[in-house]
Length: 282
Image (cartoon, rainbow, N blue to C red):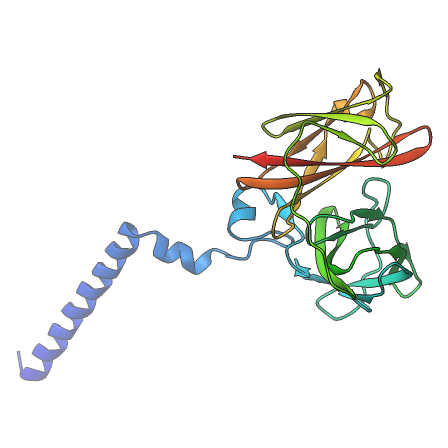
């Protein structure tokens, strides 16, 4: 065999050896190929990391997610005055989204709360012809507020958030200590019974049990926010939360240890009442 042929044969042997090593490496370390094919961003509306692993328990940490973003026309508000908040949901193409599902009897839920979890408001804005959502709001205290646009589109629940600012010096308050009882803004006594992910609220007035009226398709409506980042938790009403007994019940997924602020709204005698609790998860 001449020198040229010997060199060619040696090169072929080397190529086969490298190919075998590569195949063995792929079999021993499947993560190498998995990293090349796994979508780290998740599906539309999903999140990588904590939220994906826990079944998307938190939302509202960003102004954009799942190809949609919330745009607030003017985030600067004047303290103690009736202002009109206006915002739009915009798609990846820059166009304003107009079509939404009906969720909890409404197409859009607007939650506003100050960064220290005070000043909670749950509003139902009206959609203009151009797709902009508007609602009147009065914020009595200065500071930074979080605006949550909570909605469902194409069968997928989403919560997008942005900031509002109210002029003046903010007197931020610490989160109240956890208690099992609280009084609503209408003078109703409410007792919280929390076991794991289950939350049951018993409402009484003058010592007598109150049977709540249907509100937003259930016996009550619950918003849960995590202390600090105000992560918006995914909460499900249970059958007991449909006004069939003296308790309003929910299932809440708490993704991390820490303190959470619970805002329960219930309807009785034609009026909606709000009560707040602090829940500590260990």
